[in-house]
Length: 508
Image (cartoon, rainbow, N blue to C red; front, top):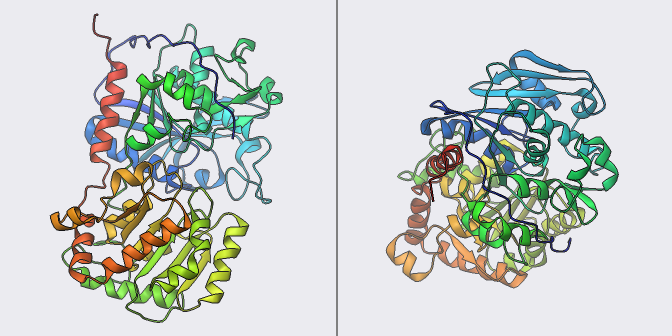
């Protein structure tokens, strides 16, 4: 893990916009993936859901994406808006179009993005060696759009997501002299992924020499994309209030805690929501039987479906699932280390995901030892993820840190009781089933603070005990299903943040 960042000088407050903006506010969103076109994790879900969520709050969103094959395949009504013959090593076009109701811009640069499989990794599982250039190209294209170079596309603000688009504020700062001012918002979905590259890439980024400095992109002798975004964005959001506090600490800041404390006035936490139309057990086409909070008995058919799909015998024992990247960040190693005891406690477990080879092998070995209690499917399957939420009794999320988390929100929505570590967005979205919460009828899951194999086991044992109390369990399911996990409140918070950046400062 990198050492703490040096403390830079304070930035002056952003200047007010040069012109009043219309209602609705036009916002440019910039990201590396977007559901349903391309998704490797929660980032894609969030970027795909925000445009519709912001519309009722007077904001229209157009999203700029890199031209990965799946994105180009899903782009409808494409029109070429710009040609850039020499764009970061090859010819590129900027396309405008849509996917359903989603308004899109796509950077079509085959030399950068026309590659099969995962957008970030090659077939060998390693990062593409030119990732620094690929996403600098995306960020510079976003800056050109933000400056108003496309007729009819004039955003009042640009909202960037994670390291892949975190250079946008830096391009706006260093190359924006004499151009229209466009404030920027950076959302941190996971601080662990920072976009840190060797200094040898510098000459390919198209930035002035003075930008390679501690007050710019230089980060311990390397180039830091996320560091630059944190430095230059007018506002920074983390995807939950608790995560926004955690990342300002030495333990949670991943080497950027000093900079995040320095930018503390610009940093806030806005918890993610989910698309409650896509994730709705009353209408979900992936389920064998649809249901709602008043017809939980119908979930039984989905439970039987999961058992049959994974070759597990029908049983009254609680059926837990994990839908996750199989990594140490997600705490999956803690589960594999205690799976024998978890099975002995009376629980069963179904796993869907992929990740570290050693963790995958440990889970598969446990499934071989306990074929009637443990099942594993490697990889990700959106259809199956819905079926697990609709059929399992509980979802286990033992993350060591979790900026927000979405699977626990899906679990709440589907009556699949979340069992979560008390970190980040997990702490903000699940109400622990302590005695007071159970008596008040507000408990929605199980939280645990001891992030260890023993802590996971204790949480599972609590879950098994609660499952043996049918009335209590049903009340927890119903409380979770009635919780507001939509984007409504969070979208309102984003819209208010946008308007605060576009309002002239009050006189002192």
